[in-house]
Image (cartoon, rainbow, N blue to C red; front, side, top):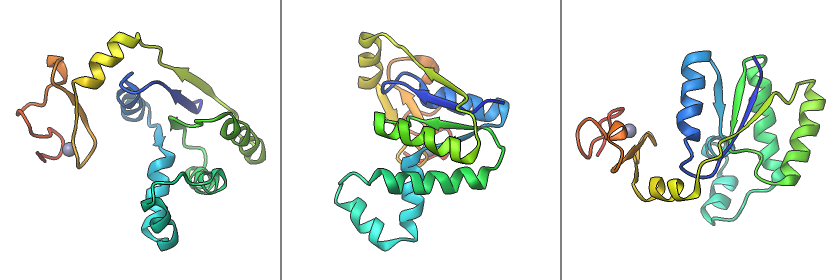
Length: 154
Ligand SMILES: [Zn+2]
């Protein structure tokens, strides 16, 4: 299976698509934000830096990404919302060449701007597991109003 880079504006359905690809096809979803937060758990200096709200350097982002890709071996993965800049894209290309990996496919979810605006303003997110729900679209309502289906947190 090909690795996937998933790009989309907020509320385009990126998380839902990534979840489907993982459940149906055994992909592993990689978020560099999550990787950095994981690293920060065991790295006090990074933890303190991230608390300042400043952007972490590309070098560090790639350091954690490379470690993750090495760990995955040949398991197909989805890069969720990464690369974010041209510089990161160039660096990612170099990383792939060094690791002898193919780029795979890039999926861009192109959703109408008005529709995105409606989704963003009606979106609610579980503070615990980050599952998203809608206050507007019935099929995305939580089963019990105000409670997360997944972890039962308010
Ligand atoms: Zn939850």
